[in-house]
Image 1 (cartoon, each protein chain N blue to C red):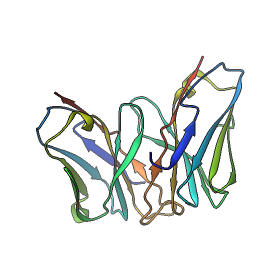
Image 2 (tube, each protein chain N blue to C red; image 1 turned 90 degrees about the vertical axis):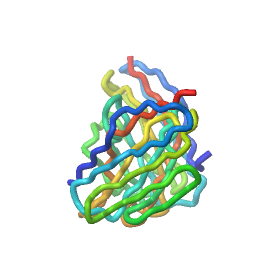
Image 3 (cartoon, one colour; image 1 turned 30 degrees about the vertical axis):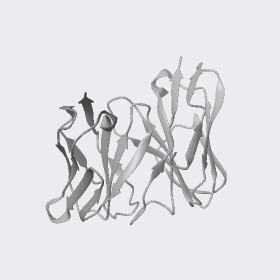
Image 4 (cartoon, chains in turn green, purple; image 1 turned 120 degrees about the horizontal axis):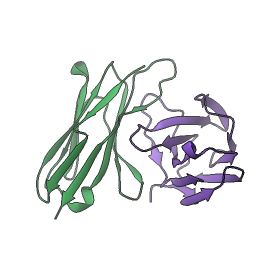
Length: 110
Length: 115
């Protein structure tokens, strides 16, 4: 099945800094999503982005399907951005299940 | 608030206990999922229900027993668990069975500790 790798595994930022999180996947995808898990465990769906670019406030995401990666950009980071960011992808196989990466742990310091 | 509610938030149980986790979604979705999240591991899909029928069972031990009485409610019945079953159990829903175009919406999870 499809494999999903995320980098970096950990990231520490000062408030106001920008960052880029990366998600590589091993096969073509028809479903790719980014999630944010806050320190209390709640997973929030940030983007559904199997291809192209989307923006939502200070967050934006780009998926280059032909090169098998997706990027999540966080601009002007805030302490509330802290948590774990997960990428999940599905490759359109028989079961078409979303496979999650191991996440990027982000800590934004005031 | 994502529209998916899980109870309880925390649960401590002994290996001989029987307990149940509850999930309710208020989004009008047709598919519901149980995921297990262990420390330092990716989220693992356990079960999927689509229109109240189980469509996915990922080789989960029989000590975990799911139940989906209707498209809004999902339960995970637990019995004779092992300490390694301690984890965050997450419920999710999507409009239809996961696949092309489906966005997942998660609950806050139940943090389970098995003593």
